[in-house]
Amino acid sequence: MCTGDNVLTARSIALQCGIFTPGGIIMEGPVFRDLNEREMLEVVPRLQVLARSSPSDKQLLVEKLKELGEIVGVTGDGTNDGPALKTADVGFSMGIAGTEVAKEASDIILMDDNFASIVKAIMWGRCVNDAVRKFLQFQISVNITAVVITFVTAVASNSETSALTAVQLLWINIIMDTFAALALATDPASPSLLDRKPDKKTAPLFSVDMYKQIFGQAIYQCIIILVFHFAGQAIFDLKDDPNDESVGLNNDTKLNTLVFNAFVFAQIFNSINSRRIDSRKNVFEGVLRNWYFIIITLLGKCTFG
Image (cartoon, rainbow, N blue to C red; front, side, top):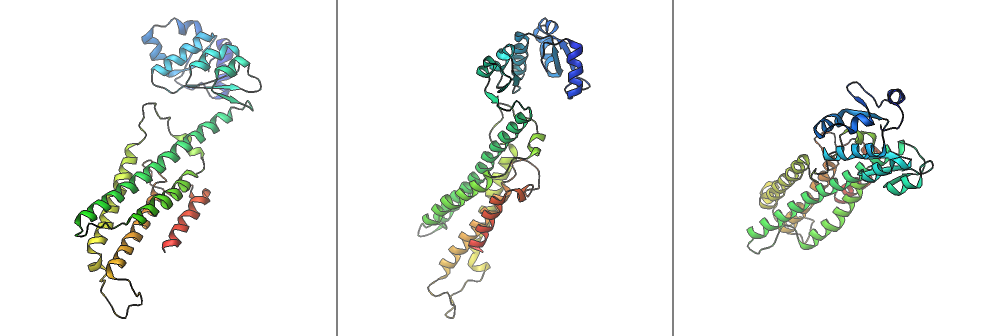
């Protein structure tokens, strides 16, 4: 909290708001600006209240936080908050009580002057970011599996035909990916998204947990589909039967149908697992709040069930 009030007033307000906690530091602006570079970088991570601060003190604090690799958000309503709002990664100004200078310097204007709107904005921002990563996790695992299966089965075939036809691959890319994007992108924001620490600017788009999920799904799917393709007739004892009611379907057609259906069911299972991009195990957390996901999953199950 940066304020122009004296240190006693600032301390009292910070205690009532829960900003000042044990282990935190309260400092006045003149003392803060007189620190050397090393002392300033040591103090900034624990600095919770900056009293009697000038506009340049607020801007200096933001700059030091950014030097430490932090993503900085500043909330202000006055003209003296302009430099800090402009320097911050995200500046929030008040739409009702804020001055025009603060509004021009900020990135986001809170139309209701409610601090709870900032929390809601962060929550939904993380939700959108997670939705993109969930879909990428699903999409890449599907494509890896499809490419490997198509290549291996085509090379192993005497006629150079793959287990998945062009029409089947097109169906997977148009239908499966579209519905999966809709299902994974409609997960509503929840307060649990605020439990984790913010990602660094240098954080990669794909986390280690996502790589595990992508390659784990791709490997298990490739093994299952290739086993079905090369050993399916022996496993399921597919033989030509003159009394079989499936007239016009030879063993190869039945096997290709089996392989394609197994691939589609594997993607339904994959879409459920893609709801998590972290190391937590409960993939059904909050699923009852997303009716789009339930309906699309059941629709896919009924279509091939």
